[in-house]
Image (cartoon, rainbow, N blue to C red):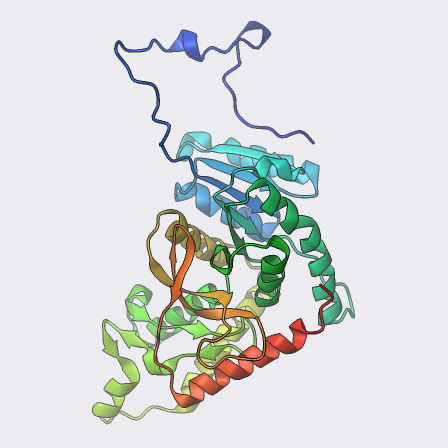
Length: 350
C-alpha cells in the first residue's frame, strides 16, 4: 500500500492549481523557516489507535497525522473516513501506510499496536509475543524520528514501555507509558460522583502498575484544595476504609467492565492519550500519573523498571517526578507494585 494524502493537483495532467487559484500579495516575505510543524504518528489502527487519532484531530493537536498498521485495506479505509470529515475539522494532513518511513520527522510516536491474546494463552507468552512485535516497531520509529518522543499505550504498558526504552536507545525522558493517567481519571470520576462535584475539581492519583497492584494515594486527595481525609478527621466525620477499598476496586475493574459490555475500550483512552499529547507538544508542564523510569524514587530498588508516578510533562518529555508525600503504607504498596512488574519483566527474553 502506498502512502496517501490530500493534494492540489486537480488540473490537466496533474497541474498544481494552487498558483492559479491564488495571487500572491506584493512585497510578501517567504514563509518563516522557524514555523513549527507538528507531526504525530499513531502505530496501530485498531479501536484504541483510531479513538486516539480522532481525538487528536478534534483537539487540533497536529498539523500532520500519520497512521501505520499492518492491514492495508482497513488502514486506507480509516484514513479516508477521517479525511472525508475535513470540512468539520481543523486542517490536518492525514496520511497512512504500512511503511514506517512515513513517520519520518515525527514529534510524537504513539504506539497502540499489540498482539491479541489467544484462548488458554499465558500472560507471559502473550507478553513475549508483544515484545517480538515491538522489536519490529520500535527500531524503525527510532531510525526515522531520532528526536521523537515515544508514548506507549499497548498493554501491559509498564513492561512494554521498558521494552521500548531498551529497543530505542532513547534517553528515559523521551520514552513514556500512558500508565495510570486513565486510571486516575476513573478515580477522580468515582470520587466526584460520591461527593457530587465536578471531577476537574478533584485532585487524586493512582500510581504504580497499570493493573491489579496499582496504588490509590488516598492521603493526598483534595477537592477544591481541601484535603479530604484530614478534613473528615478534623470534623470528626466517620468514614469506612472498606468504602475507599471499593472505590479503588471499581477503578481497577473499570476497563474489564467496559470490555465485557462493548468488547473493547476506546473513547476514554483516546481522551487520556490526547491529554498527554497536548501536555507534551504544547509544553504545558502539567503533572500526569504516567509510566516513567522509576528506579530510585520512593525507595524503589531491584533494577530498572517503568511504573506510574506523578510526573511533569513538557516539550522534551518527562521534566521530573513530583515529590508527592506518601504514607508508609502507600510507599510499601508502591514498592510491592514495582516488585510485581519486575517479576514479570525478569522473565522476558530481550
